[in-house]
Length: 450
Image 1: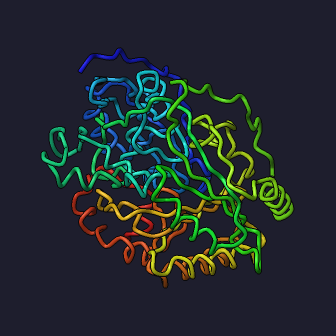
Image 2: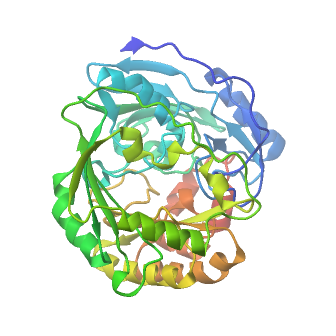
């Protein structure tokens, strides 16, 4: 491997942090970690002073899984240096605060890409491991944890542990998807996949009903690396579940171009949400009718395909001062179609929902982490402006549908899941609790385990 010089994001950080959705509104005090050599002392010092803490990456989790129960977080963003890269075999080691976008900036010109990427490139490497993120190619490559070779774990009660499938395997499995509770990750080594161009060859077509999604997925998923669908969550009746199906593959011809970030931005946070019944209905109808009725093949920049919302800085501000909640579930294959129809019918009837509703099928590859979210089946993700209504009425109905189908919610995106639902859906929580660092605790963990 060759040495890569690191760089620093600077010392200026916000002292008060929230999750990306802005709910729950429990600001966190940030304690930046700037050097790996200081990590053990900082972790133990925060535990002595405040009882517990929690590693905080770039704050892209939507609920309270990234919020420390003490309100005091160990900010990992400044720990953002590249350590080693093996260009021949496609392996990279970097500190936990490096973002996936920063990795892509480095590796794309040399013909490499992430094996698995979620819907934002602004998540940190440590956060990607701690939440075992997944993407549009789960049916082919599984979760992010499958690309992880090894990492270093710092705990308050022992010396740092090097973890891999062969070395400290129990800590390796528990930390992948472990929500930052087993220790603080200082660096991670992952495998990459080779590419000849950074563009994505896509095929898109609209469909008129939910059952058409399953027909398209059965036909096209086995043929393509990436697959995802947008759903009109406001559609009802014979149009229930209509949407746009998109598949993609890395282009066979093109350039190894790193896409520059868009300058579009939501400059202020409005007093009320811009996402409401009228704006949703109008946007969804217009978007669906603009999509091709027959299969359209085109080449797309990778940022447009993987990270559509990253093109708008601070897009979360559109939901207003109260923020929003995401409801993301996965439903087992045998009951997915019927349960999804119930979910979408309930959402459409409520008159609230998301302009970016994501539907995709998960594959059969077992997830490597104890609390990894995906299972063989279908995943649905919807955003709701925060109010008393979703939690007290709609979410209860949606939760019951997921529960009865044997599905589960995604801890990294959750702010309302009941303890009973969590413990039933994730029985390995008992094992994780036994391995949890006593100096680490989150609001989510206290909410669902106590």
